[in-house]
Length: 150
Image (cartoon, rainbow, N blue to C red; front, side, top):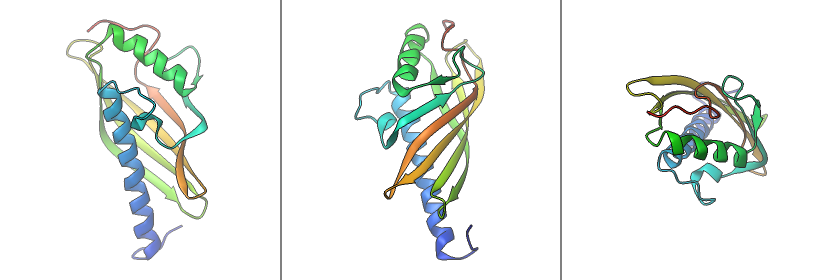
């Protein structure tokens, strides 16, 4: 996939850092409650983007608009809800044009004094030179259907 010390490795690391920053920008936009279509939440999303939340919802897969509507209902009950990325582990395959960004996340503001840990895996694919966010899987986390006031 890459050669140590080679130019391709530098490119792979730069792509990984760029995709990780895009995930951080999305988290910052969420924390700022910036759900405007011009926010980073919508930046370079594949039109068929989906999120899987197998441990959190009765429905396993949501579109972006469904996810944002669920989060808006949730934060109406838990206005202090906040996300913080604690670590990243990214894999980029330049030749295949695919990348995964694994993120450890802490969520606070659901229950007073409790921090929930969950992980998200963000999938990216290169289309015509752009790395589009194609899907996301969130494991554990919060049940958006059953909010508890902090």
